[in-house]
Amino acid sequence: MIPRYSRPKMAAIWEPSNKFRIWFEIEAHACDAMAELGVIPADAAKAVWERGDKPYTDARIERIDEIERETRHDVIAFLTELAEQVGDEARFVHQGMTSSDVLDTCLAVQMTQAADILLADLDNMLAALKKRAREFKLTPCIGRSHGIHAEPTTFGVKLAGHYAEFDRCRTRMQAARAEIATCAISGAVGTFANIDPAVEAHVAEKLGLAPEPVSTQVIPRDRHAQFFATLAITAAAVERLSTEVRHLQRTEVREAQEYFAPGQKGSSAMPHKRNPILTENLTGLARVVRMAVVPALENVALWHERDISHSSVERMIGPDATITLDFALGRLASVIEKLVVYPANMLEHLNRFGGIHDSQRVLLALTQRGVSREDGYKIVQRAAMKVWRSFGIDPDDPDAEIELNDEDREAAAQDNRLMFFLATDSQLTDALSKADMDELFNVDPVAYHTKNVDTIFARVFGKA
Image (cartoon, rainbow, N blue to C red):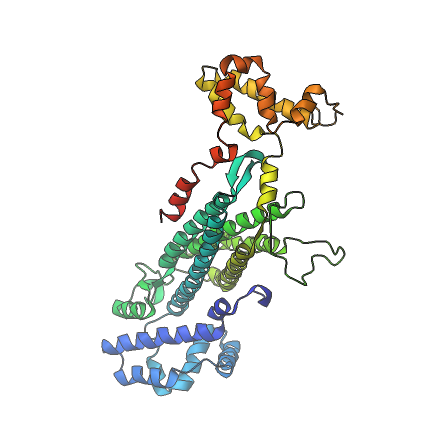
């Protein structure tokens, strides 16, 4: 992944120095186990640690690369350079092992290291969402379905929904980490013909992994597919929240927006611009993470006991997907922490269209007074269409030029235009008296729609 979208800690996992260090530890721990079994001399295992346990400097890495240019085999190049460090005892290294024992076990370690960073990222993301959700727990705003005004909610409930989603992502990430944390030291075609299973058990314990039940020379790639699918689902959660912020920042909405730093510029051409560049960037990065899923799934079907069609894929998607998601989660947490929220605009938008967001409330009241749902729907919809007309909008003919009549102008003076038009509908008044209507709507509409917010928050955050 390019440096622009990389953070040092995650990027370091995929550096050659870390990879070769893990390779060394796999081989050295295997030597210890084989010495314990009497397969190789104890002095040989000791020599591997004493002479080979050195940092993988640029010089050592360049030497390995130089050997690989001749051998065209990365593990053999690594073992050859290690032998140059260890000396004669190096002949006991890699006894009964195959390259995939080193490569797959190393990849498992790297992916668990990456998962640990991503879990920490998710914790930071959850902390940011929890704080802002509580801050705006009862801040009313209009809910939208299909992008159209629906019924009131609160901005805190919106954020609580995203919190719950990222919490599920964290649970999946923990499961994916456990799924990928397996070790294979089983030799050619995975039968342990030339190496004792105790060696695998020892290496697995030292590296914090579990022995792979059946490795067939490689660790089955369904495990990796689950890991990358989990990254993709998490990236989808990043995109969903980013898309919400982008919508709310639109000029005609402006209910929330990314923090705009002093001195920041929004456009090279238009000095007035304050663009949602961070969340737009996150939408794009989510696509990069999702890109890994199909190749990871296609890696599952290897030929017979193994082939290496998966290898080139994983050398790219492993670093790219984890580094990108790490960067994205860090950026999104910062966006939420600094998000600028405009409660007054939210309330203005909620009340903008004359109370039509209470249409379902009236419909339900009519059905409870003996009116059929079909007739009740017609009564309320008829009044709602009159509300639209009073705003100069003809729902049946968007191009029509509407001339407001006296009733429209009278409705425009009302706080709740829907109630005004309902009160003049004889079908409604036959079912609901003025006293019924007053009783029905003596509760503030916002309070009515948000009365169960505490229940939602208790489900998401617990009762504390």
